[in-house]
Length: 502
Image 1: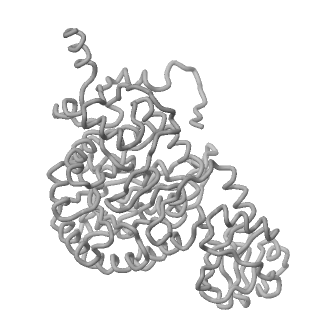
Image 2 (image 1 turned 135 degrees about the horizontal axis):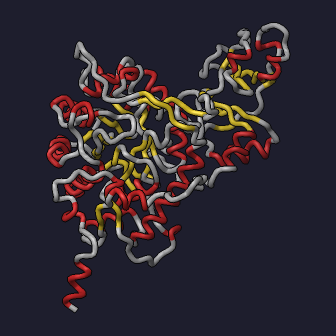
Image 3 (image 1 turned 180 degrees about the vertical axis):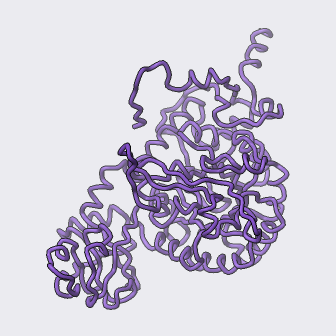
């Protein structure tokens, strides 16, 4: 029996033993050994926290990047039970407007149809590809709705004429507080092909169409949305550490941001510590997430300053070159485990930021102590990501995806994230690229979460908290994979194949 016990003890490594060897491991470097299955995958509970006081139904967060997180992404992620962090690579008033747009509805999309005045004479191009446009008295969202313009009607005119000559009477409006099922029922009950969404105070928010309903019905059923205490979607926002970010912070809080992320590539700085203290003093009711960090020493300083969450990762993103350029950072698996082992004792949730390419990486990040995973490239290229699709010469449909440390992004203001806004010479810590069309996050995130549930089931973890308990009790065992093991663990030995995740 003693020999058998020794054999069991040697069957894989505990996390403390594996991560104490001075080796920086990425997600692909490690593999979990399976546990005992005593429950169905659908019974796995993925509910978690973004920060101390902000609960989520699923552990997904959209990164604060200008090619990832704006109003459409924020509304879609919140409707799925996740959250998005709206980027700050724009003027403060524009960032606040993005937050208001996402929080002004309960629908899982933001169509942003054009708004015209009756006297305007828009070209077909000004319909921006939309089938409909809203018409208000002054051509803005806060004046009275007077009609709906149809792009086909504008196209049938030989010359540009005022909208008033062909606009249709506005149908009965739907409440902007309707969730998807309520809005769909409203269209069906009223026999409408479209309906404007109007808030309680009369502001024209958006337009929902029967085609929107049909499209969303084709996706997996929406789960429990992420809602704040005000009953509106949970939306977070990022700020920097400069003096003018204090004014930005004020606008974001007024816009209803549920959490604030201090966006810095290296969070252990006097600038961030000062901003944390200021923000906690001025807005103690708003959760503050600090970072980025990869060591316990970094985390300790931010936790002692008062953060309600930590963002972990440095140089692990697909478009980030920080480790290459600056020779600092850490393998993401090691970083998540080390920081979470400290943060758990202070009730500070961890956001594993970067290095997520598949559902297995999400399982690893969460099982190593993270409460959520932050994704950039995983969400870029989706319908909800900012930007327009382009076609490559080989016919692939792509969207731009750029690192906030790229020179292109730095010209818009993101150089402050790398403490380079006051420097005469700018050095890039990221690149500009393109990612393939992924479809809608409303489709692929639910499938991804189902894969994560199956991963947890294989580990024997019935919830995210259960996974953390198994990790801390040394029940979860890990091993390091050789290069050959990594090849073997993927698709190999085939002349050709078609890979479909769902």
